Length: 85
Length: 342
Image (cartoon, rainbow over all chains, first blue to last red; front, side, top):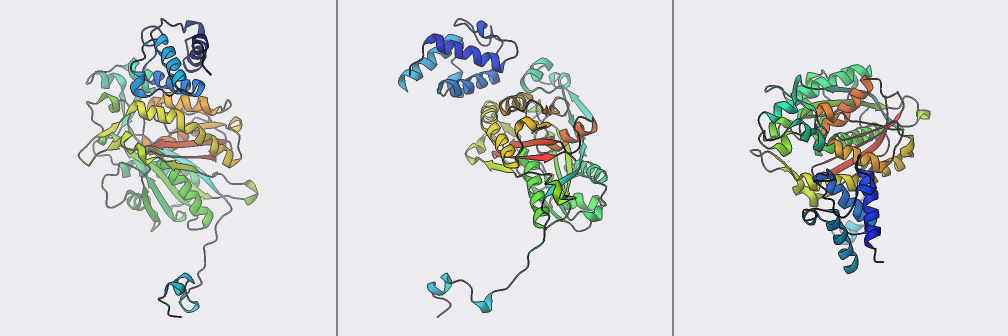
């Protein structure tokens, strides 16, 4: 089942709301940088990756995570993985 | 039949060679009688660390949740700290040293390999000739030792057991490596384990759920006696925040205590972010979650009994209340069980 970009974005919003104290789902827009705009550090990125695995069934390794700078990067990664899976 | 033939060996020992042995009589259940904790006097703040390495208070607090930690004096040993914590637990239990017949010290930082720490600690506490051994399951050590103590009481191989977690991690830390120097600290915690007073009460130590994953041995290690502790932080964080809440839930299930009934959740104080993530995934809304790491740092096998002793001292936990413990660390090893607060 291929997910739309909107569905992935909404899912990421839910994840961010759950694991961070001060980011709300509507702040999670494609152009946002995790580090610069959403104040996410490397450990929170690990939590996002593992939560994304539970939600979307897509594994994101520590190495792959290093290249995912913006919300759009993660959306694209999950879409690509979803297509090839 | 020739006794050396395969057929004879398969038939088992002959009547003539067998011995009928007796077994010990145990207790229907074990419980914790008292906790005790010890922290070295010296407080090391984040600002003090920031003076000698590239880090700062806010960064340390946000990454690991530690505000300050305790570091042992240069001549203060793991055995010294174990004796201090063990003595407090013993005093709190109302027992005398003569009542203890087994001493287990969980530690991964003993001063020397031989002799073990447990026999020295027992002698210094005036406990005459108990069984005494050290146990190394790193940061999971206390929960492993507690399970072993509970089993010893239940099977009758010991009646009262002194269980201690004691560590001097400061002597294995590279004080120029900010990834580990900000985390690890020194301290000790102890518990006295004995039989349930009345079998009708039910056990005070639930079934242990334990395990290991040796394929992750390279994530936390000290290479040799001349090396410092190394930790692959992100990999450990990923493991701890994904693999452990099912272990915690299983320990509840085995004990027949729902997470919602827990009065306290006391995971190993590895990193406040890990503590909070496991607690969130466990889903125990009534439980007071231990956050002793804020002022104690990560004291490996000492962290759980140290946190519990301080929570009890502050009056945060009532006697008989169910608490879930989970230790996890290098190996990797992990162990969890539900206990009743003494």
